[in-house]
Amino acid sequence: MSISDQYTHGHQESVLSSHRWRTADNSAGYLLPALVPGQRLLDVGCGPGSITIDLAARVAPGEVVGLDSSEAVVVLAREAARSARATNLTFRTGDIYALDYPDASFDVVHAHQVLQHLTDPVAALRELRRVARPGGLVAVRDADYAAMTWYPPSAGLDEWRALYREVTVANRAQADAGRRLLSWVRDAGYDPAGISASAGSWCYATPKDRAWWAELWAERSTSSDFATQAIAHGLADDVALEYLADSWRAWGALDDAWFAVLHGEILARV
Image (cartoon, rainbow, N blue to C red; front, top):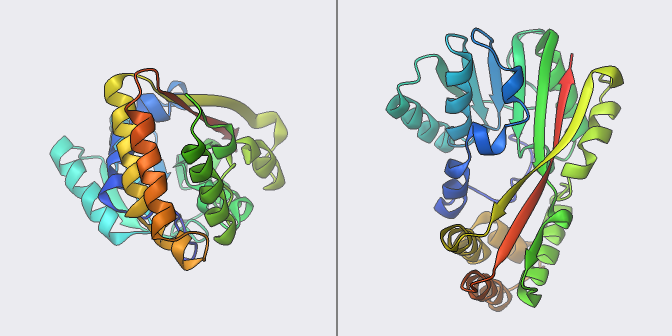
């Protein structure tokens, strides 16, 4: 993402743990059929690099660059790449609004869960298109918080989502980015004939998965940039955040708990 925008989640371990869980299979399945060995790929907003490393394996021996605004996260991604022995992969810091690459540099430009945090996603999409080669692809995927659904009902989780949306509004970002991707790509000037829109999901329903997901958000509710920003914007206090954490843990302990995250997905041919 950009160094000038406010990242709602932050880079605490509760956030990074969920990012490391992401793979090309569970988070970029819509893109995988378009990948072939030898492509040059840019992954913008790469985080700790788990998806990037998988993508690098798919296009090897093609070069892959992972880009993130956080130097600390880039260090973690480099360590992960060394552990995976990904020799066709490098990580750098950068700004999505001003990519340090010439026009038409990459066959594939990918951004996962990035546009939702930006104050100007359309400008970012124009920059992604600029560095993509003619005939190449820009691939973006973002969650949609209003479309997230769970069972059993929880007043605490309802309050969590309402607060999350308030924080993103204060950050001039868009929590419901998934449903807007098609509109943003069209506004950025991509050829409508080359745009393919789809949707994907994550589902947490096994005892292990729902306990993990609930504990992540319980921790984020009190110990993350989301919590810090909620307090700084005057939207919550420590008592309210503790209530959210307790609500997440109570929900996650239920035998019939089920949570689904809907994502918008776009493949845009340049």
